[in-house]
Length: 224
Image (cartoon, rainbow, N blue to C red; front, side):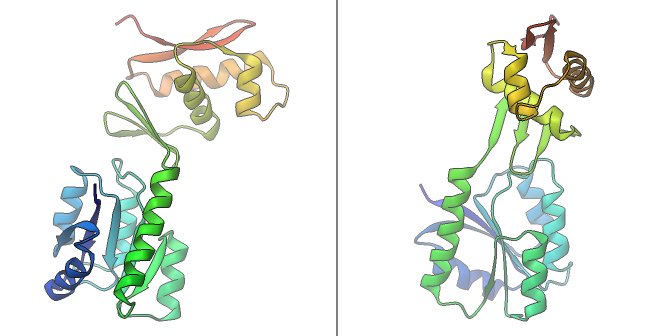
């Protein structure tokens, strides 16, 4: 199965050239419009995204930030491609978090190799947990219920992840301490407080974490 790559560029000629270079190795989805691309990314998960740096609707940097802020973004590699090969553009691209900056003059075989390498790394390190309508993106450290982001603290995120991965088994408080606090001794009340706050934040979910005093905690389905 071919990797699916979204290419956003205001030049049809550029998109045609990229498609010709990549079509034997990738399934290319070209977008002349940023707005069209943003509407499609809500419906489809791509394996990679390539953004032109300079476009009339707004530069690639602002589009990158819009993608990163989307609740359904899967954290796939984002590349900038541009004829503007200035040091300033390279540094800004990598500082924002793009996985690579590709000048348009790059040889086709090198372009393919760079894309494949980054995508293989992403696929092998992808950390997405989905459980009964709840989704955790461990790459972005974001949690969603029904596509709506739930703002969790880092500790709450670790407790929730641990509970899902061990479901339906109970979690001993020693296991929670080891996973969340790296073995540091914590009081039962501290664990209870974080679990209580976590349950309040995911109140719309079908499950909750139940505290077993002196024992630990367990993820259970609510009696709806």
